[in-house]
Length: 370
Image (cartoon, one colour):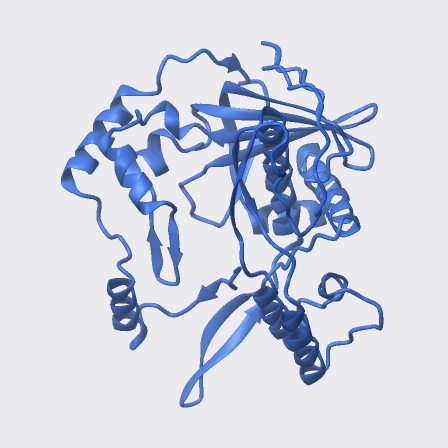
């Protein structure tokens, strides 16, 4: 179930000691074992493996993350085409540095994910890799897995390819920087296209019954004699950037379904009892729920800057329960179902590996709903 980001004055009592107790109780991993840290240093110094890669150094990638981030795992570029758009999405190729079965590999499997905490984070990889050699830091060449996805004028996918590539991030930007450039008229075309493509993809999401909660950040603030809770609405650029990430994920899901192998993250439809409870919450908070509207349509119409609407949005996250992983089987096996589109995906020829020039050569169907 999604949860709203939380910021607290971590250095102030009682938060520092309280979060230390929480980390201990939940067994949040702390420092890496010495043998893992040593091996990570060796792997970073050795560099990426020798797998063949296309040269994508001419593509003007930028990354968009919270300020100060160094674990940059994705970068974006886009251009306008006569029939729509071309989106390129580079994902840091950590596997190029970490051999299967190595101590770093086993430790990352044990950790599973990077845990982001109110007073810090517990990283998946040792910093020398996650924030150094494997990170898409600006101004340096890096190995990446490169998605090239063509969209029509409405933002629907018409072709996609995935290739190993060498890329260079031109700039590490914060969400606020990008938002300021777009609103101030100083944004380069790729950032303007981020908004254009992002808004089209959000419209398609609504049409297929999907929902983006855009949960507000909750911040603990000092009040007279105690503490209060304030809400901060997300910037539009965060929603646009999210849609690009989802686009790549959908393209990957399509490839796995075509191949008949893979694992997909799916979510079942919300139980009626949860929808009924959400309706009662809407009445209590004064949130309008028009007759015949779905909960997703209500969420889409909320004012994220209104405290009662923000509180309702947090409660709406409780409807997204039961997320899990489904294995994709061979032809004839049941197709995984996701709440945003509970229909099997059509079959078509398996996409090719792509041309060495980076031109998409797969035939991903634009009717696929993922």
